[in-house]
Structures are given as structure tokens and as C-alpha cells.
Length: 110
Image 1: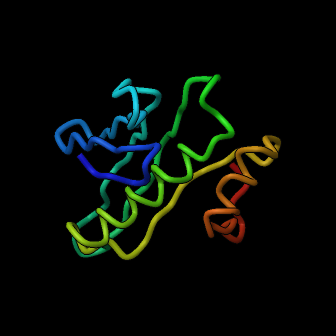
Image 2: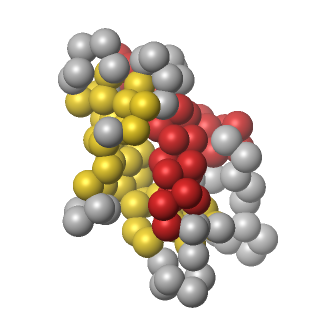
Image 3: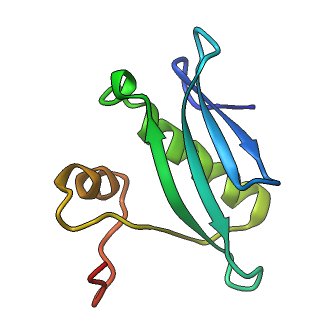
């Protein structure tokens, strides 16, 4: 279990390449982060999906979970590159990733 803040914890399941996002106070699972580890020599991880229960969105749980996930992957796996996708017609999703420091890849139209 990875502590992110007093509000959020992250529980990694490397076998399924999934991390449960846990409410630290109640212990309830409130979302999930799914990922794919790249080739070892690339040292990259693609975050395929992050999802939170509707009533838990907007409180920082998703951002905290992504930051904790990045820190754990850097420390534990030596990851140097993180990739995620957001449809260009979904402003909130794009804004979420921009706030975390991700940037659009040149020429990507997906």
C-alpha cells in the first residue's frame, strides 16, 4: 500500500498492471489506475486508464494517485517516461493531464 496523502492510498497489483485507488479514511476502493509497462530498456509506462467514482471526482484523489504511481514506478522500476492519452474533445481529461505536467505529443491525433 502506498500512502499518497491523508486522503488517498494506492494499492498496486503488478500482476494485473492495475492499482486500486483507496480512500484513506474509509478504506473503500474509489477508483482504479490501469497501466502497461514498456520494454525494460525503454523504461516507460503507459497509463491506460484512470477512473474514479463520480462522487469522488474533483477532490484531488486522481491527481494524488497518479503522482504516487509515478514516484513508485521511478523508485521501484527505474521508469523515466510516462505516457497517457486524452481525447482532444474531452477538455477535462486533457486539463487533468496538463495539470500533472504531461504534454501533447507532436502529431498525435488520437
